[in-house]
Length: 188
Image (tube, rainbow, N blue to C red):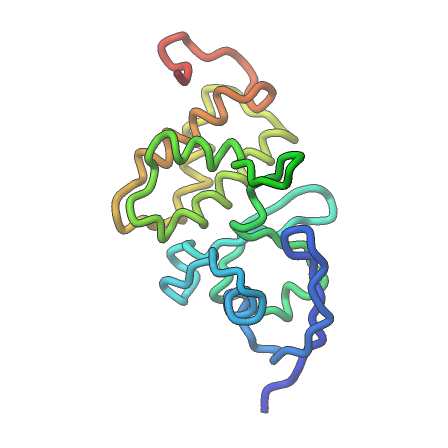
């Protein structure tokens, strides 16, 4: 018999719960079936493709992505979580304002079917936030992007545009890198 959990969390800045849930419920199921947050995509169901990656914010100010398809709600109980629905901001009138990562993905036409895009956005967001806290030398940008996005699978082969978009965000945002970018390498 499956046990129950009294689940509470902060999801996209909103307090959720307490909810009486099966303790073996996966986070992707909670998001889609209980909270109607359908942007997190179930793909492989094994934590391999990262299409379902969500962000867990740590108390120390850091953040990381975790696969929602194999991460149970019991592990996320009491945590602070962000999904793709929580990445965009709002203007004074309450209208959505895309994050720099989301805007760059649009400008670079980074996706085709967009199934994997939420996971890529969340991974790139975590990378940018990490660089805000600890900038890296400009010559290390390519390696940092590769490390952050490498776990993500795009079946439409959109990798090049995803990488270019993230590179442009990093190189055009003051304070994320140390050193200068050669004129030929600067984002347009």
